Amino acid sequence: MAKGRELKSRIKSVEGTRKITRTMEMVSTSKLKRAQDRVVAARPYARALADVIADLYSPVLAEQFPLLRQPAAVKRAAVLLITSNRGLAGAFNANLIREARNLLAKLGAANTDTELHVVGRKGLGYFRYIGAAVASSRVDIGDKPRAEHATELVDGLMRDFVSGRLDAVYVVYAKYNSPLSTPPATDRILPVAPPERKGPARDYLLFPSAQAILTQLLPLYVRNAVYRALVETAAGEQGARRTAMKNATDNAGEMLNVLRRTYNRARQAQITQEIAEIVGGAEALKG
Image (tube, rainbow, N blue to C red; front, side, top):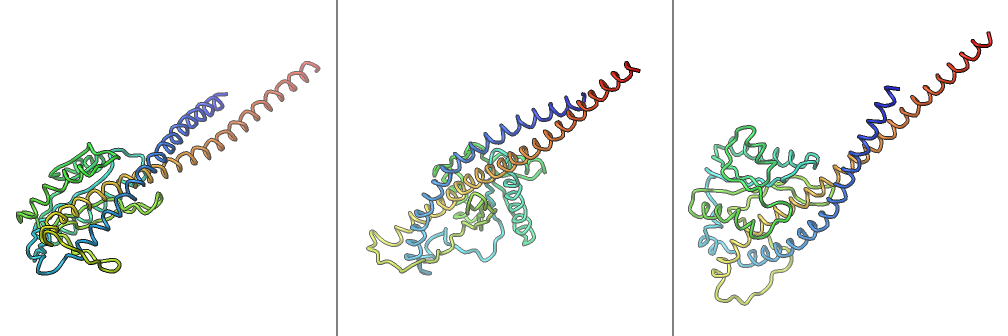
């Protein structure tokens, strides 16, 4: 019954794996709800910032703010890639890394010098593995990003842009549409493109002046863009992991059904053979 023992061992192993994947699916489902709440909370603030900047923007004012400076040519750019610290999320991180590689290749083809900044162990591990230069990295943000994290990531890049060392800054992240749709996306966050006004324009009483207000709002707008990228990627990670673990649990269930049927057939064949041997032995004794 060597084959039967092997099958029982495989059944036990698959059952243990299914328990793990089911538990991970439940954990991701719980984390996903909180991550979704952060995404939903971040979007109205971003929309309000964009609306105010769109209403205050004018070509005359734009000349006074370095963050609105549109370079004639992008000679040096920074790419901020946001990935997760953990795997077991299907192709989630692989898609983000591919998006960043395509962007770097596109910029390189345009003779643009690039520097790469990476958030997350998965992205960092990949680019170190292929020997690519990484200007900076963060692996301590995790799946609960805060506004302070966005500030720490982008303030140095803003200073480099204002000083003229950088001509553009891009962020590569997972755009959260739904738990089943988290495609990789690329946004250029610097220079700030004038947002399009959605809905009717509002009349404002400006104090002390439009210049003073934009001085405060433009850095907030850039930081908020990075914060939204962080929270959307965190939500996308949980959605992708939940989907991957659900698929793994379902596949384990199907495999268990096959293994159990195979084991039952093998056991039935063994019992039939033993009965045949007993009957044959009895007939031999009669003869």
